[in-house]
Image (cartoon, rainbow, N blue to C red; front, side, top):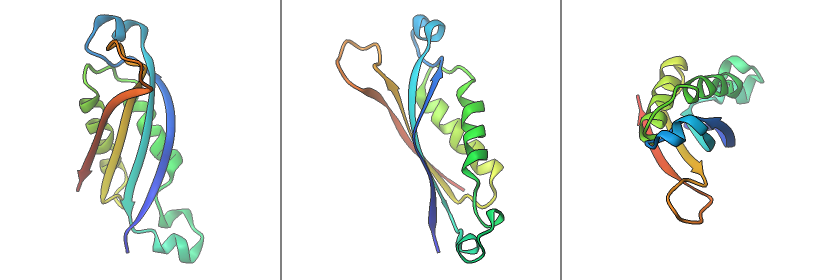
Length: 119
């Protein structure tokens, strides 16, 4: 059985961007994360060991977001690979990463990328 562990609407401040100003000033980023896994054990036994702890996933995300990168593609891919490496029960990770109010001369809530990485 395939299930999902989800973190939605995570908002973090970080220093990602191609422009020097983005790297110095930083911006807010929004993340949605879905992790494909089988947590039928947790459904049956009410035990955290049978699933992926989203608090530890948050720790992984926070750590990777703290590493400045030019491209959101790089950040999202790095986060997905780290989640897969640190959580053996994870089968695939989907990450949507948006920069709020990006400096591109347009009035928009955010711009970014979505990546899917599978084992």
